[in-house]
Picture 1 (tube, rainbow, N blue to C red):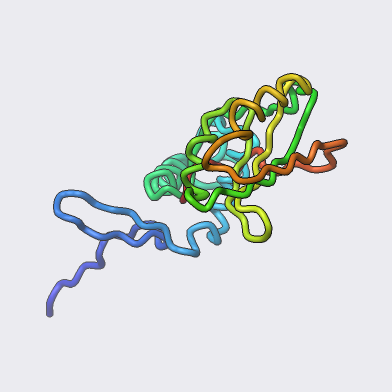
Picture 2 (cartoon, rainbow, N blue to C red):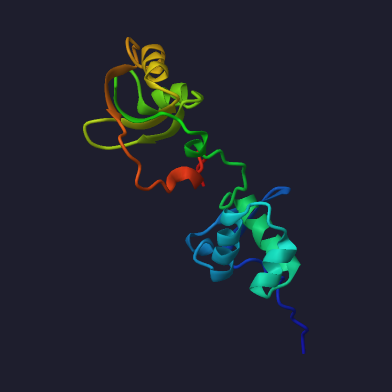
Length: 183
């Protein structure tokens, strides 16, 4: 009779591939479908500095389980814990959306990369439809908005058209927690 041992178990929602000396963790579709992972993420969304010990106590699991789950999700790129500035708490005066049509000689990626480090921009997305990019800008007033448009949008070779849509009231904004990095 042979003694067969079971292989060590890992988070069953992460595929592991050995690439030479590196172990790559690739998230699968069901990583975020795992109920315990969802609960951990939900608690960290409320307070990203919550100690693993408190999370474990509230979820009735070991601290090591929480630590391992968080580390695996971070390693695979599914979870990032970062500081977040809520620009609405800073009392900015203007919130505008820009519909940008990219010039035929450029690409949406090139324009987005050029604009992404502007402090006034809080959101850039490549879209379908009559515009190529939708950009959200917050600023301390109309003068700052005009300066931004003059400096970064008008008379630029990579932008053929900009439509400015100034916000009048905000009813919901759940995009504050979205990352700029891809999973």
